[in-house]
Figure 1 (cartoon, one colour):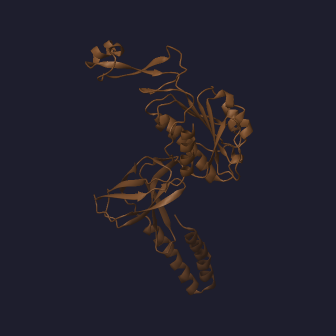
Figure 2 (cartoon, rainbow, N blue to C red):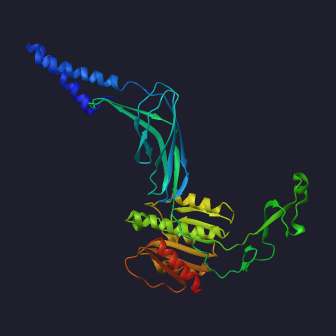
Amino acid sequence: MLTPLGWGTAAGCVPLYAAGWWLGYPEPATLAAAGLAAVAGALLWTLPKPRLDVRREIAPAKVQRGEPAVGVLHVVNRGRPVRGLSARDAAGAADVAVDVPRLRSGGRRTVTYRLPTARRGEIPVGPLRLVRADPLRLARRVREYGEPRVLLVRPRTVPLPVLPSGRAHHLEGPTSDRSPAGTATFHALREYVVGDELRHIHWKSSARTGTLMVRRLVDASLPTTTVVLEARAAAWPDPDDFELAVDAAASAAAGAASAGFPVRVLTGGGPLAATRGGPDDLEVLLDALTSAATQEGAGSAVDAVRGVRAGGSLVVVAAGDAELGRIASVRARFDRVVVLRVRPAAPASAPPGVQLIDVPDLDGLAEAWRRLGSAR
């Protein structure tokens, strides 16, 4: 493929040759012929196609924002020997420079390089683009190798303990002191361990597997942590503030999920995720918050809260100018209400029944959250 310089050279040489030939001046015609020959030579220069097999890996495939991730390319040369190559591997909207060393015929190389993880989201990685250009930059040919992969850059989190919400905590796991009798329900089967009650043994499964299996029962009325993220585009003029808000929401949700409690995450645009207190809940929540984005037509955080089931703890992650009065209007529906204001311009007083945390950064959130828990 000719570059703009190549097209310009070819376009200028044709009339120059015609004028020299028409007027009987050999010098312009010779110069034009040399230019056209250079263009033809550039096309021939870029014609050879390296026969490469490229297999791509990403390690790890999921990282928190800012954590390191690397791309790994396994390159096999199926054709003639090739000298060292400079290539570009696509990583979202950016390109990452990749140097492929010299490869003999049948040779194999493994190349690693850093991937950008400063921005949250699903980042497509690949294909590898090999650019071959002539020394005069008259022609340029791009070839692609390898199947793309996806790097998941998830929100950053800090450890946050579960805040007390007026519920009792059983020594054998999370439960609720308001649970009516009979709310323990079957969840799954697991192998028997010493200390399990014999009445929980599932004899049919034990006979089929040859191993004692017991029923795992869970309390279906565990207090739920509801995390509401303000997602109106007008509330976040600075994209970095919204990224911090997503990190704060992810930290609150991760803290409750790690303790085995059900979690709901929603925005004014609708629900993002809902978990019931299982071992995979943390992964589900972080994956869902990876795609969180501002929306032009989204409703307010308070509007989103009005449509969810009452009870448990409510954590509202809002901009610095949050409407605290409107948030306080839903206080009676929850055992505890906490508002996280992201980088507020001025301090504010919390309405009755609402606890307020100003979040300058994630470290500040963790410190203020711990103080809030110890003050109860």
